[in-house]
Length: 504
Image: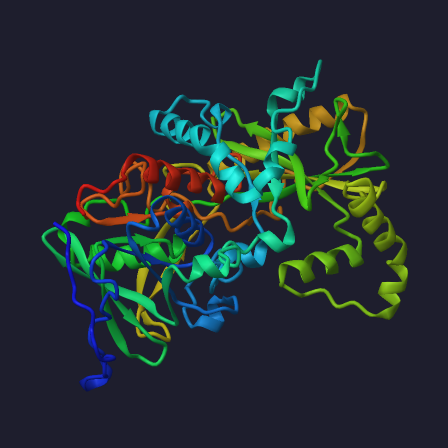
């Protein structure tokens, strides 16, 4: 049944103990949708709702941060993360979220991500392939038609393993900023509030409880709720709800947490980045960087990808990347700039004129990013330690298991055979026979709110009638891609299959 709320004639006033009354929906007639989190996926969802259904619903968007992108320490929500940096380096708060800081590479799952023919993955792949073109057009516009996603590389054993990705151009990576002013006027935006709880009644959410940094609480009613606050913060909240809402208690919320584990396998010397006649030099198409990677499947069925890192030891290039991605750690002086002038000229000439990334001919690295085994012992839990908001902080239990190491060793031997076949001169960086190899997480959190167990394929939280969740946490594993754009396909599936809503 549609809820109707009369418009408040006077502004709300604060009550006792720092509380304020409910934030009243202003339209009073249209069904209301509350999007909690205006990062990459929240901004994408808002845009698509406005495109498809904006005249039929009222959209309320809530963001914990503001216009400036902040890390977890600045926001006061630091996690107990042990030996992973996924929380401290891999998540940001504010309008546009993490991708506004790190950029984002657009890729999708395909049949090569399901070597064991798992039915859950078959459905994920079907959704990706069904909506991939729509997502590409939303992110790239006409540029999507200019990119060859399945290049025809004749007579190459590697051609069946190729997968194309696109780094969004610098000016397009913040999806919230791509909501132009006329679109922003059609939503009600509330910033500086963190969701800290749900008001539940008869199996659905009636309102969410919000809190400001200075401790004031508010309740926000709506008809439907979309939780898009990122994998970690969304899981933290649902863990809190799980403790007081019995229908969620048997669901594996926070279990089988995973990431890509990344390691440098080899450094190649004195050769262009070509294997079996395939050139892996990134190309520039309308300001976006088009890359190639190789899908890697280990003997135990685990999936990852082999990609190539260029110019990493050139100080000027490292500084340029850090400047673009807003994470400065490299110090550079006048002498460094003078020494790097030749590189910067070649780099600019390549990007602007030749439309290719200039690659130093002396070295490029072969990098492996591998999914983690599922099931695993990794998990997200709530601690007894409160954060700045008085909320239970998140504890991240994360390890690299023996099955993960076996997969890395197996793929390493296959990659080395390819380098030898191409008669390349290389230095090995990862040696499975010795301890102490550098293996890191790459901030692609997955698995802790999986489809098929906690969520439906369209993002609906099982056992809660009017709550949907979209983040990389919904994917059981990371497989061969940076997973954000794949989640956008699930948003499209939801908008196509679950509208018009029967509960309005």
